[in-house]
Length: 295
Image 1: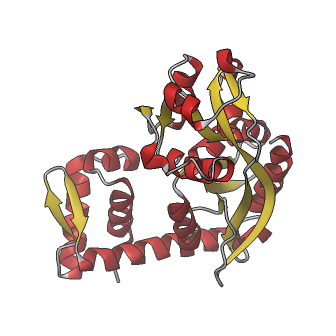
Image 2 (image 1 turned 180 degrees about the horizontal axis):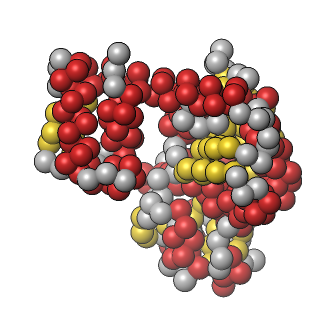
Protein backbone atom coordinates (compact mmCIF):
# COMPACT_ATOMS: atom_id res chain seq x y z
CA UNK A 1 0.00 0.00 0.00
CA UNK A 2 1.51 3.32 -1.11
CA UNK A 3 1.74 6.05 1.50
CA UNK A 4 -1.15 8.40 0.72
CA UNK A 5 0.68 11.60 1.77
CA UNK A 6 3.79 10.81 -0.26
CA UNK A 7 1.63 9.86 -3.25
CA UNK A 8 -0.32 13.11 -3.09
CA UNK A 9 2.93 15.12 -2.96
CA UNK A 10 4.24 13.24 -5.98
CA UNK A 11 0.98 13.68 -7.92
CA UNK A 12 0.98 17.42 -7.19
CA UNK A 13 4.63 17.69 -8.24
CA UNK A 14 3.87 16.01 -11.57
CA UNK A 15 0.98 18.38 -12.19
CA UNK A 16 3.01 21.52 -11.42
CA UNK A 17 6.38 20.34 -12.76
CA UNK A 18 8.45 22.40 -10.32
CA UNK A 19 9.70 21.52 -6.82
CA UNK A 20 9.60 25.03 -5.34
CA UNK A 21 6.09 25.83 -6.59
CA UNK A 22 4.90 22.42 -5.39
CA UNK A 23 6.26 23.20 -1.94
CA UNK A 24 4.41 26.54 -1.95
CA UNK A 25 1.11 24.94 -3.01
CA UNK A 26 1.37 22.21 -0.36
CA UNK A 27 2.65 24.49 2.39
CA UNK A 28 5.90 22.53 2.64
CA UNK A 29 9.60 23.18 2.19
CA UNK A 30 11.34 22.12 -1.01
CA UNK A 31 13.47 19.58 0.94
CA UNK A 32 10.22 18.20 2.34
CA UNK A 33 8.88 17.61 -1.18
CA UNK A 34 12.14 15.91 -2.15
CA UNK A 35 11.97 13.75 0.97
CA UNK A 36 8.45 12.59 0.15
CA UNK A 37 9.56 11.77 -3.38
CA UNK A 38 12.57 9.81 -2.09
CA UNK A 39 10.45 7.86 0.41
CA UNK A 40 7.85 7.02 -2.23
CA UNK A 41 10.56 5.84 -4.65
CA UNK A 42 12.03 3.67 -1.88
CA UNK A 43 8.61 2.20 -1.24
CA UNK A 44 8.15 1.43 -4.94
CA UNK A 45 11.70 0.16 -5.25
CA UNK A 46 12.54 2.13 -8.40
CA UNK A 47 13.31 5.77 -9.32
CA UNK A 48 10.23 7.77 -10.23
CA UNK A 49 11.85 10.72 -12.03
CA UNK A 50 14.92 11.59 -14.06
CA UNK A 51 16.22 15.10 -13.34
CA UNK A 52 17.42 17.39 -16.12
CA UNK A 53 18.60 20.61 -14.50
CA UNK A 54 15.55 22.20 -12.86
CA UNK A 55 13.12 20.07 -14.87
CA UNK A 56 12.45 16.35 -14.79
CA UNK A 57 10.82 13.53 -16.71
CA UNK A 58 8.99 10.51 -15.37
CA UNK A 59 10.42 7.03 -15.49
CA UNK A 60 8.07 4.16 -16.47
CA UNK A 61 7.64 3.47 -12.75
CA UNK A 62 6.86 7.14 -12.19
CA UNK A 63 4.21 7.11 -14.90
CA UNK A 64 2.57 4.07 -13.30
CA UNK A 65 2.61 5.67 -9.84
CA UNK A 66 1.20 8.94 -11.22
CA UNK A 67 -1.71 7.03 -12.77
CA UNK A 68 -2.45 5.57 -9.33
CA UNK A 69 -2.26 9.03 -7.75
CA UNK A 70 -4.70 10.52 -10.27
CA UNK A 71 -7.08 7.58 -9.86
CA UNK A 72 -6.95 7.87 -6.07
CA UNK A 73 -7.78 11.58 -6.23
CA UNK A 74 -10.78 10.80 -8.40
CA UNK A 75 -11.96 8.04 -6.06
CA UNK A 76 -11.62 10.29 -3.01
CA UNK A 77 -13.60 13.06 -4.69
CA UNK A 78 -16.35 10.62 -5.62
CA UNK A 79 -16.43 9.38 -2.01
CA UNK A 80 -16.75 12.95 -0.75
CA UNK A 81 -19.60 13.54 -3.17
CA UNK A 82 -21.42 10.49 -1.82
CA UNK A 83 -21.01 11.20 1.88
CA UNK A 84 -21.59 14.95 1.92
CA UNK A 85 -24.94 16.69 1.56
CA UNK A 86 -25.64 17.23 -2.12
CA UNK A 87 -26.01 20.99 -1.86
CA UNK A 88 -25.40 23.01 -5.05
CA UNK A 89 -23.74 25.75 -2.99
CA UNK A 90 -21.33 23.54 -1.03
CA UNK A 91 -18.16 21.76 -2.09
CA UNK A 92 -15.32 21.89 -4.59
CA UNK A 93 -15.96 22.11 -8.32
CA UNK A 94 -13.59 22.55 -11.25
CA UNK A 95 -13.97 23.39 -14.92
CA UNK A 96 -11.51 23.44 -17.82
CA UNK A 97 -11.98 25.51 -20.96
CA UNK A 98 -10.07 27.58 -23.50
CA UNK A 99 -8.33 30.74 -22.36
CA UNK A 100 -10.71 33.05 -24.20
CA UNK A 101 -13.79 31.33 -22.82
CA UNK A 102 -12.31 31.31 -19.31
CA UNK A 103 -11.79 35.10 -19.46
CA UNK A 104 -15.36 35.59 -20.62
CA UNK A 105 -16.96 33.07 -18.26
CA UNK A 106 -15.25 33.86 -14.96
CA UNK A 107 -17.01 37.19 -14.26
CA UNK A 108 -20.35 35.42 -14.78
CA UNK A 109 -19.48 33.01 -11.94
CA UNK A 110 -18.62 35.58 -9.29
CA UNK A 111 -22.23 36.31 -8.38
CA UNK A 112 -22.76 32.65 -7.53
CA UNK A 113 -19.62 32.66 -5.37
CA UNK A 114 -20.93 35.68 -3.40
CA UNK A 115 -24.09 33.70 -2.65
CA UNK A 116 -22.26 30.47 -1.82
CA UNK A 117 -19.41 31.04 0.70
CA UNK A 118 -18.87 27.28 1.09
CA UNK A 119 -18.34 26.75 -2.63
CA UNK A 120 -14.78 26.43 -4.00
CA UNK A 121 -14.75 27.10 -7.73
CA UNK A 122 -11.69 26.39 -9.88
CA UNK A 123 -11.48 27.63 -13.50
CA UNK A 124 -8.50 26.42 -15.55
CA UNK A 125 -7.55 27.47 -19.08
CA UNK A 126 -6.25 24.46 -20.99
CA UNK A 127 -5.89 23.11 -24.55
CA UNK A 128 -8.57 20.83 -25.98
CA UNK A 129 -6.97 17.43 -25.41
CA UNK A 130 -5.86 18.36 -21.91
CA UNK A 131 -9.46 19.27 -21.05
CA UNK A 132 -10.76 15.93 -22.30
CA UNK A 133 -8.07 13.96 -20.47
CA UNK A 134 -8.57 15.92 -17.24
CA UNK A 135 -12.34 15.34 -17.31
CA UNK A 136 -11.78 11.62 -17.83
CA UNK A 137 -9.23 11.52 -14.99
CA UNK A 138 -11.54 13.41 -12.64
CA UNK A 139 -9.34 16.51 -12.40
CA UNK A 140 -12.12 18.61 -13.96
CA UNK A 141 -15.80 18.12 -13.16
CA UNK A 142 -16.77 19.85 -16.40
CA UNK A 143 -14.98 20.71 -19.61
CA UNK A 144 -15.94 23.06 -22.42
CA UNK A 145 -14.77 21.99 -25.88
CA UNK A 146 -15.56 22.93 -29.46
CA UNK A 147 -16.47 19.46 -30.68
CA UNK A 148 -18.54 16.55 -29.43
CA UNK A 149 -16.62 13.82 -27.63
CA UNK A 150 -17.74 10.25 -28.23
CA UNK A 151 -16.37 8.18 -25.36
CA UNK A 152 -18.10 5.53 -23.24
CA UNK A 153 -17.08 7.21 -19.95
CA UNK A 154 -18.13 10.72 -20.96
CA UNK A 155 -21.36 12.54 -21.67
CA UNK A 156 -21.61 15.71 -23.75
CA UNK A 157 -24.27 18.20 -24.76
CA UNK A 158 -24.15 21.21 -27.04
CA UNK A 159 -25.06 24.44 -25.27
CA UNK A 160 -24.03 27.27 -27.61
CA UNK A 161 -22.55 28.37 -30.92
CA UNK A 162 -19.71 30.87 -30.91
CA UNK A 163 -18.66 33.05 -33.82
CA UNK A 164 -15.06 33.12 -34.98
CA UNK A 165 -14.26 36.82 -35.38
CA UNK A 166 -11.84 38.71 -37.61
CA UNK A 167 -10.67 41.62 -35.43
CA UNK A 168 -9.02 44.80 -36.74
CA UNK A 169 -8.24 48.22 -35.24
CA UNK A 170 -11.36 50.34 -34.82
CA UNK A 171 -9.91 52.93 -37.21
CA UNK A 172 -10.32 50.39 -40.03
CA UNK A 173 -14.00 49.65 -39.34
CA UNK A 174 -16.13 49.68 -42.47
CA UNK A 175 -13.37 48.82 -44.92
CA UNK A 176 -13.67 45.89 -47.29
CA UNK A 177 -10.90 43.40 -46.54
CA UNK A 178 -9.12 40.92 -48.73
CA UNK A 179 -5.98 38.89 -48.09
CA UNK A 180 -3.70 41.51 -49.62
CA UNK A 181 -4.98 44.22 -47.29
CA UNK A 182 -4.80 41.91 -44.29
CA UNK A 183 -1.19 41.03 -45.11
CA UNK A 184 -0.35 44.70 -45.32
CA UNK A 185 -1.68 45.13 -41.78
CA UNK A 186 -0.03 41.97 -40.41
CA UNK A 187 -1.31 39.09 -38.30
CA UNK A 188 -1.21 39.17 -34.50
CA UNK A 189 -0.55 35.46 -34.11
CA UNK A 190 -1.27 33.27 -31.10
CA UNK A 191 -1.27 29.50 -30.43
CA UNK A 192 -4.82 28.93 -31.74
CA UNK A 193 -4.63 31.70 -34.33
CA UNK A 194 -3.15 29.61 -37.13
CA UNK A 195 -5.98 27.06 -36.95
CA UNK A 196 -8.52 29.89 -36.75
CA UNK A 197 -7.00 31.48 -39.86
CA UNK A 198 -7.16 28.21 -41.77
CA UNK A 199 -10.76 27.79 -40.70
CA UNK A 200 -12.01 31.29 -41.53
CA UNK A 201 -9.84 32.25 -44.50
CA UNK A 202 -10.19 28.94 -46.35
CA UNK A 203 -13.93 29.50 -46.23
CA UNK A 204 -13.82 33.10 -47.50
CA UNK A 205 -10.74 33.14 -49.76
CA UNK A 206 -10.66 29.58 -51.16
CA UNK A 207 -8.50 30.47 -54.19
CA UNK A 208 -6.13 33.04 -52.71
CA UNK A 209 -5.50 31.55 -49.26
CA UNK A 210 -2.46 29.24 -49.16
CA UNK A 211 -2.29 28.47 -45.45
CA UNK A 212 -1.42 30.18 -42.18
CA UNK A 213 2.30 29.69 -42.77
CA UNK A 214 2.04 32.17 -45.66
CA UNK A 215 0.51 34.95 -43.59
CA UNK A 216 2.61 37.99 -42.73
CA UNK A 217 3.16 37.81 -38.97
CA UNK A 218 3.34 41.15 -37.20
CA UNK A 219 3.76 39.77 -33.68
CA UNK A 220 3.10 36.64 -31.64
CA UNK A 221 1.70 36.42 -28.10
CA UNK A 222 0.52 33.41 -26.12
CA UNK A 223 -1.28 35.23 -23.29
CA UNK A 224 -4.96 35.32 -24.21
CA UNK A 225 -5.64 38.60 -22.42
CA UNK A 226 -2.88 40.36 -24.35
CA UNK A 227 -3.74 39.20 -27.87
CA UNK A 228 -6.16 42.07 -28.63
CA UNK A 229 -3.85 44.77 -27.25
CA UNK A 230 -1.65 45.25 -30.36
CA UNK A 231 -4.80 45.18 -32.51
CA UNK A 232 -6.36 47.92 -30.38
CA UNK A 233 -3.16 49.94 -30.86
CA UNK A 234 -3.30 49.60 -34.64
CA UNK A 235 -0.43 47.11 -34.98
CA UNK A 236 -2.26 44.29 -36.75
CA UNK A 237 -5.35 42.10 -36.97
CA UNK A 238 -6.19 38.81 -35.31
CA UNK A 239 -8.82 36.08 -35.17
CA UNK A 240 -10.53 35.13 -31.90
CA UNK A 241 -13.72 33.49 -30.69
CA UNK A 242 -16.37 36.04 -29.75
CA UNK A 243 -15.85 35.30 -26.05
CA UNK A 244 -12.23 36.45 -26.31
CA UNK A 245 -13.33 39.73 -27.88
CA UNK A 246 -16.16 40.36 -25.41
CA UNK A 247 -13.84 39.74 -22.45
CA UNK A 248 -11.33 42.40 -23.57
CA UNK A 249 -11.63 45.59 -21.52
CA UNK A 250 -10.65 47.81 -24.47
CA UNK A 251 -13.01 46.30 -27.02
CA UNK A 252 -14.21 49.79 -27.99
CA UNK A 253 -10.86 50.10 -29.80
CA UNK A 254 -11.55 46.99 -31.88
CA UNK A 255 -13.78 46.34 -34.87
CA UNK A 256 -15.22 42.99 -35.91
CA UNK A 257 -15.20 42.54 -39.68
CA UNK A 258 -18.04 40.52 -41.19
CA UNK A 259 -16.62 38.45 -44.03
CA UNK A 260 -19.06 37.08 -46.63
CA UNK A 261 -19.12 33.68 -44.93
CA UNK A 262 -19.27 33.44 -41.16
CA UNK A 263 -17.75 30.58 -39.20
CA UNK A 264 -19.17 29.34 -35.92
CA UNK A 265 -17.92 26.70 -33.51
CA UNK A 266 -20.34 24.60 -31.53
CA UNK A 267 -19.58 24.58 -27.81
CA UNK A 268 -20.06 21.41 -25.78
CA UNK A 269 -20.04 20.74 -22.06
CA UNK A 270 -18.48 17.39 -21.24
CA UNK A 271 -18.37 15.48 -17.97
CA UNK A 272 -17.83 11.98 -16.69
CA UNK A 273 -21.03 9.98 -16.77
CA UNK A 274 -22.96 10.48 -13.56
CA UNK A 275 -21.20 13.65 -12.38
CA UNK A 276 -23.78 15.91 -14.00
CA UNK A 277 -26.27 14.56 -11.45
CA UNK A 278 -24.30 16.10 -8.57
CA UNK A 279 -26.12 19.26 -7.51
CA UNK A 280 -23.23 21.73 -7.75
CA UNK A 281 -22.08 20.30 -11.10
CA UNK A 282 -25.61 20.59 -12.48
CA UNK A 283 -25.86 24.14 -11.13
CA UNK A 284 -22.60 25.16 -12.82
CA UNK A 285 -23.68 23.57 -16.09
CA UNK A 286 -27.00 25.44 -16.00
CA UNK A 287 -25.28 28.73 -15.14
CA UNK A 288 -22.91 28.35 -18.10
CA UNK A 289 -25.83 27.61 -20.41
CA UNK A 290 -27.70 30.74 -19.30
CA UNK A 291 -24.63 32.95 -19.60
CA UNK A 292 -23.83 31.58 -23.07
CA UNK A 293 -27.09 33.00 -24.39
CA UNK A 294 -25.25 36.34 -24.42
CA UNK A 295 -22.62 35.07 -26.93
